[in-house]
Image (cartoon, rainbow, N blue to C red; front, side):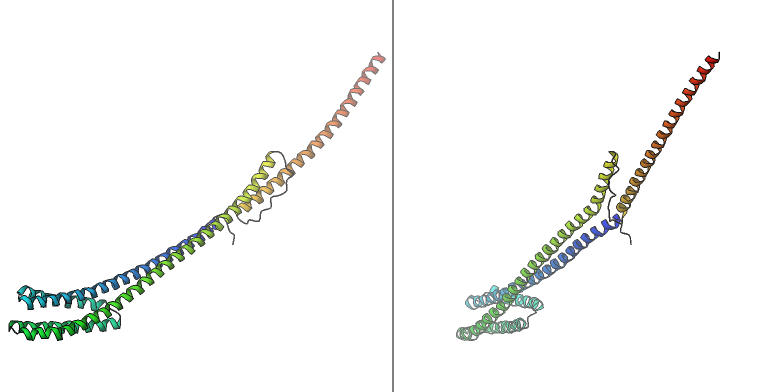
Length: 295
């Protein structure tokens, strides 16, 4: 199939466009991967924050219980119940975000411990209402302290798991960002290299034959028809132009040679006519002399 200049240009620029399209696709894929990692890390951070908030809520629950046992105000009792409700709501939301089996197990343990503490608080409040100071004081010092200690230990273990997952996700995100940079830089350099090669190739296949034809045309315009034929390997329109130019040059040389030959023939005929004219002139003179003598 004949490769015209148009097809060569189209093929060259298509190669560059394909590389650029590959860069765009890879960049989109890598950025999507980075975005997924960022969302995952955000979820892990939110889970870690929620774990810390559970710890704060339970401490608030403990503080409200102590406040009621000390002064017996209804506000502390209301705060105690509100803290319990807040814990259940936040724990339910956190359970949907956790995907680590061990983390889910620790959350279930925390829920059981918080429920035990809530029931323990209700027992202490009843003793408070019955004015059994020694009983609820002893209950707080034994059962309450044990539940609180277990809760703090378990919540720290859960926080440790979530912190580890946050660190791992952060490292994966950083690795994904680095990979995206490397891929985009690599394909960007490849696109640049291919673009330079295509530009050089196209400029060479177009400019060299055109320059050769231009130089040959200048020589012919100056009257020099002795130049050699233009050697062009292109099979496109430029090659056809060079071939046509060579044919034109050859035809010009043949025309000039024919004109030179005709000129020589005209010169020879002119010499013969001149000689004949001289002979005719001499014959006329001789006839004139003869006529005078006869008179």
